[in-house]
Image (cartoon, rainbow, N blue to C red; front, side, top):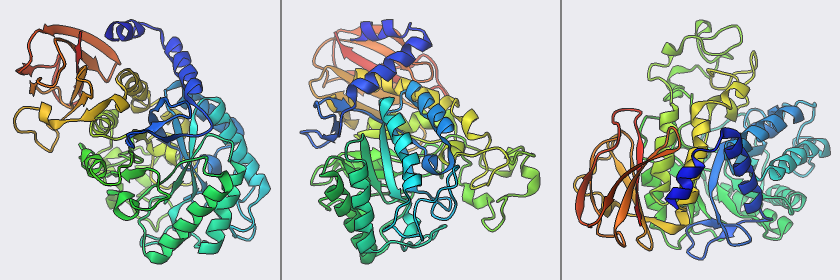
Length: 480
């Protein structure tokens, strides 16, 4: 397996792009389901499905068809498998029309969808599916019903029209590659809100005849499991670790959901976005249209003085750390995000959270391109074939930037260990099935370096090829 993978590392980038697109198309089917172990997602052919998402929340609302096609082509090339987008979008999605002048609803009523708006949604869904990607479709952002954290709104949902709207969407996209995501960055505020989500889920299932899975996107630093784990309509959990600090302990959410009963898969639906300011809310005036002092922005309303955000910005490094920490902690999927892409920021346009670039430039940010390397390793050593196992790490394991994550193949054929700072580590190799070979995977480049052979098991120290902030490594111990 390793020899084949190392040969593939010599492929030219265009070859890798073509390979990823072909794999996407091979894996996609009408609908996903839950694996027999209840830990992972599988295609209708029973093949493991690797959730690598992108938060494109405003995709339906803010991009025209040419722009949407460009965006989807790029994300397919980079190895993404799920595009998360919102029908009734966050940024005044009910009252501000799409690029063609169409609103999603007539008279702001979920009972009367606007056909012209949904033809645009149809186009985007079709293009995503043609490129081998599922659409993680949110029927609405969570501010369109009562919330403890009000947004643009307006509040339009009741139990009755939530079911009607759900059934409408379910029927319309019954035969498309869709994953339903309820929630929209909100907690379940009270029992009345819970009944609205139940009604929408009921409508979706009635409309699509149960063809598609349903999950729930919660507010930051929470998981859907906190309120909804025992709901029969919730097929898998989703958590949002948020945008508050470097080295966010995302593994805590995965570990929590992993231990719950009944067993359900769990997915990181929104970690720290690349290029978003750390704790951005502390440095913004939500009543000001610019959100920050004018001198912070240039003539295109992009950030020219990043020092205003005193804690800095999340980087590609954060993207990699959270991806590997999540997967090696039992998550069935990971969602990338970029501050300019989620809001489809355009030069000179409306500001939601100030951006370093526009959305098109942001598509090529380093963290987005690192996703293909995550895919390389997680499909070579599928998440469905290993279990998180911290007992491999010998000695004290800090819960900070020095934290180390490990997973072991169920048959003992390999061990994966991620070191965010390339720090030396002692490992207990008792769970390896036999003599193994040492391989160092570089998450920054997607390349392997071959190391020594291990004739014996036991406790052994491993020292990565480099160390320090930004020098993350994945150790692969593979039985020969």
